[in-house]
Image (cartoon, one colour):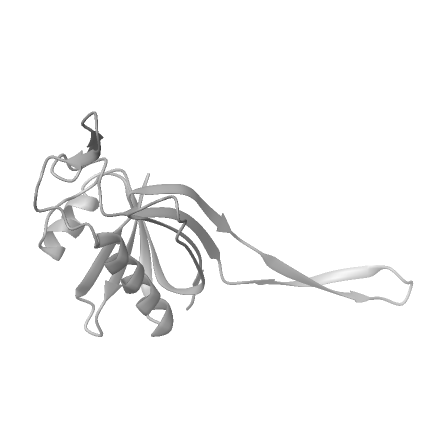
Length: 169
């Protein structure tokens, strides 16, 4: 599955699409609280169930390279790791890190798009249509409640992100 964050403006138009190179895990947590009262003979009776907001945990890898796009694919040429394109932005992982951090800092309402299709379109509407052209599920009205950024010294050009995202209604 491919997981993508969708950021929309106040009018509902797509403002930003963030797709990840690799997703190590996606976890959906659903919880409920059952209230109970003790009755006259000492045993409890449950009379109400309150569901909590669903939460999603996403563990991802962000890099300036791509396994899906041959122009940005990285390979070993016998002496060094290189890409086929000379136009590859080697700071893309920094831009994506800052974009996701900004979503958290600004308390942006986002959605998580789960899909089977990848898209390299530049136009956001076209990209969204391509991402949703096969199986897709969108978790709407979410906010990032926790963000961990791991920049390992041995992984040049790669950042590891762990996010907890909560659906708000």
